[in-house]
Structures are given as structure tokens and as C-alpha cells.
Image (tube, rainbow, N blue to C red; front, top):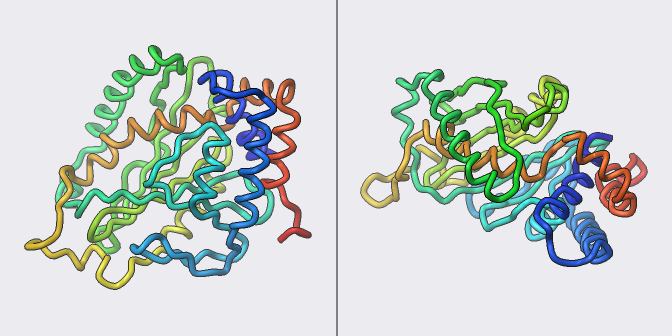
Length: 294
């Protein structure tokens, strides 16, 4: 099961790469605790899920939502960082091979004027240059370098709904296309900032999983007074950057973040099978629940 391998592999990758403190037994105990806490807090669809004081996500049937702080604890158990921007996680109730990470950025009102004039080739060039610059830091910290491969979804902005979608494929040296992880990024702009629902999946599964991202984005509605159209220029904060920065600027940081968790990287999956059977079982219990548990 791809996502089970991803979760367990990410924990081990973080342990070896980042040299986290604590023994393997300590990490496994924390993994067990994180999984138990996430399971107890899981909300099953259909259900209305509050996203802070900003919006409501109408969680569809067949999906599950893990709120904070349990979501952050689970992400950390998988070797990822967690901060106060994280809202929660969405996964399938069946055999999940994807994960959606929900975050809220209190950036202020994002002006979307530049969407009319942006050039996707320029955005690609900016993102690639920024990633190459970021590789200097990754090398210093012992992380593998990233190479931008190309668009999976060219930036597309719906001015009527104030929704942005884009996706870029990236790889580490030696990876083939089947091994590439994909971050399919969706944004809902509001009055005070924006919510991201970012789908993490594999290159082989992205076409099948794209509808999940679209379904969730359509199911998100800002609360009264929090929508993009509710902006008041005399009182509200305006973001320091425009829409294009959500692709060319924020993207570099995002790609670096998800490189740490190394989604679906087979080299880490092999390590997991050899050294992480216990942790694999722990994470697997949560991410591979059968229909009898749903």
C-alpha cells in the first residue's frame, strides 16, 4: 500500500537523515501514540468541518478528516514539520494512497490583478531558479538536491471563485518518473488570507487523484464576512505579495518541505522494510483500516 510505505518511510527517512534525538523504541512509542490520537479524533464524512474561524469544509462521504493538534503530531511522527498554519489532514476512508494537507495562511488580502498578465514560462523560470538557489541550503543541511521537472498542472486561476490550482513535478538525483512525488496545490483566497488544500500523491497516481483535490476545493466555503468579496480596503490588511508569488515564490519553500518527507521514494521504502517493521505496522494500522473499521 503506497501510503503506508510513504508514512513509515518518511518516519525512518527523518530519523536517519535528520538524526533525531531518541532511540528507535522512543520513536515507535511516539508513532503509536500519534496514530492512536489521530484515530480517536478522526471525523468521518459526510460532515461539516470547521476550518478555524474562516471556512467550512463539507467533507464528502468516503473521506476522513484529522484535526489539530492530532494532525500536527502525526505529521511530526512522519518526519515532517508542523506549525500553527496547519489546520488538518484529509484522507480516504478506504485504502488511502493520497493525503491532503490543509493550511491557513494569515497573509492578508491577496490581490489577483497579476493573474491577467502572468506568463507561465516566466513563473517556471523563477521557480526553477529559486529551487536551484535552495539547493545550496539543502546541501548544507544534508538533504538531497531537487530538480524541477515540469508542470503537472500549469497555474490556473478562476477569478469568479478566487481559486488557484497549480502543480509541479520535482525529483531528486537518480529518480525516474515513477518514483517522483507530486504536490498538487490548490488555494482558496479569502478576505484575510488563504486556505491551501494540497494533495500529496505519486506521479503514477496523479491523474486518478486530481478529482479529489477539485472535489475538496469545491466543498470549501468561507464563512459570512470572511470571503474574498468581503474585503474592505479602508480597514483590511493587504498581503505584501500578489497571486503570482503563490506559485513562483511560495512554491520553492513548499517543494523543499515535502522533499523532507520523501513521499514514495523507493530508497526509503527499502530501509523501512529492513529496519522499520514495527513502525510500519503501527502507521499501517491507521492508514490501512478496512471497511470493518469505517
